Length: 71
Image 1 (cartoon, rainbow, N blue to C red):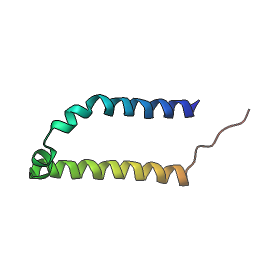
Image 2 (image 1 turned 60 degrees about the vertical axis):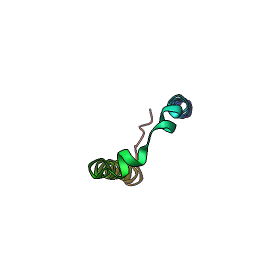
Image 3 (image 1 turned 90 degrees about the vertical axis):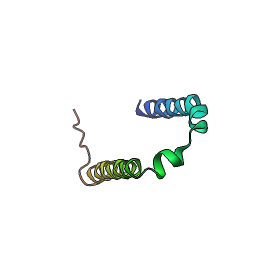
């Protein structure tokens, strides 16, 4: 069951990227996000938060796994 959900999420991500690719291709990302110091710092903060959340989830999955109760 969970395998199908993961495949559905990957398919949805691929469809989303396919639909917005023309818009992404026409934007000037370097000028908007890299050269703009405020936007660049926000990107760094978002990446750090994402890394922290993913790291905490991996840590909790490894050291405190879900215990299933058998009937």
